[in-house]
Amino acid sequence: MSDSVIIIPTYNERENVQKMMDAILNLSLSFDILFIDDASPDKTAAIIEEMKKQHPDRIFIEKRKGKLGLGTAYIHGFNWALKRDYQFVFEMDCDFSHNPNDLIRLHDAIKKEGDLVVGSRYCSGGKVKNWPLKRIMMSYFASVYVRMILFINVKDTTAGFKCYKREVLQKIKLQNIPFKGYAFQVCMKYAALRNGFKIKEIPITFIDRERGVSKMSTGIFKEAFFGVFKMRKMDL
Image (cartoon, rainbow, N blue to C red; front, top):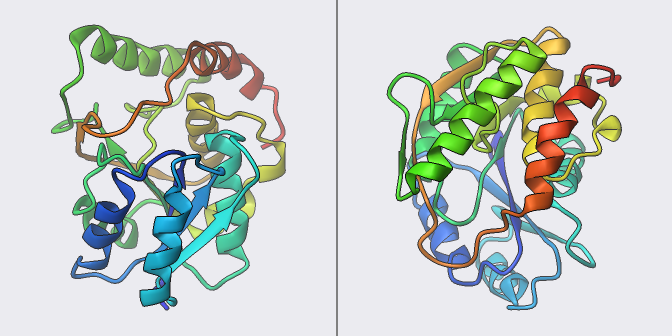
């Protein structure tokens, strides 16, 4: 058993999931993988189950009955990981917008400094590829907006490529976080800081998905825009 588990929510990721498993399993550092699948109609779970037979101690899957949102998937995964002896818990997308090779850099960074390490698009050295300028500007200024409202010094507030020390997830009141999309990513960083933990950002190159369909929606954007005001009053 590894000291680290990567939580990957999936919904209709059959075009990516096999390649993602292969990429992680072939890294020089050992990581366990927990998939949270929300009843993908394209049978993503079946691909994971088949690979799990070959790697029963490395690959795990929790299947939910429907599409319940990214935030609830991660909280489900956090609680699963906390019941086991993992010291480092990662968040990662399945669409290769997050480079699996960067997992080792995040792991190295959290062992040296920081309680939560963020793979950042907007700190020095971070980049975004294959996004139209309009989306880059919207994402960048969303982080500026969050920093202004919450008074936090995190460049990439909506980043979803992260590694937590176990103690961070044990301290945060996960049951009080209602958000499902980008607001969830913001809230977890804010909660970590509110509880006295240190966030370290390391640069990554974020590459827009090449296969499958984005889950971005207007509702997710609205939740994040208005959710930051709620966070200031929440018991985290």
